[in-house]
Length: 88
Image 1 (cartoon, helix red, strand yellow):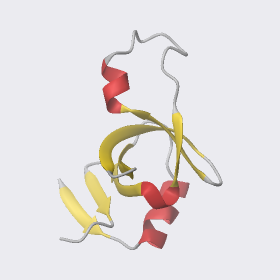
Image 2 (cartoon, rainbow, N blue to C red):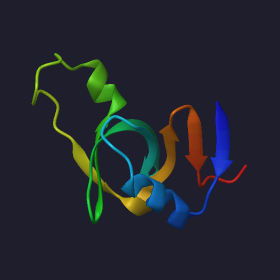
Image 3 (cartoon, one colour):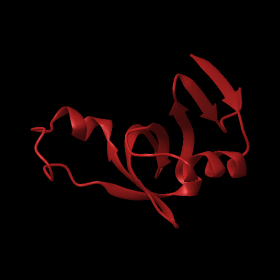
Image 4 (spheres, rainbow, N blue to C red):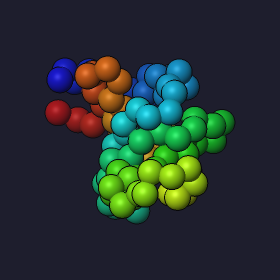
């Protein structure tokens, strides 16, 4: 897997083109977690944390997503490439 370092603006531009299911790394209230995109909106991204997906019964609506602001998203993984705004 390759890592491409991008600015926050470049990462947001890539997010705008995403569809559901892409993986993100998020930092919220000092904690980092990975999540899958459910929906990309104007003010943030609705995601389902991967820990919740593990406990899912695989039926529609059994896991409720949460909306995170764009500035809390650190990485986006698309087709084996990680777009990261983290320093090396």
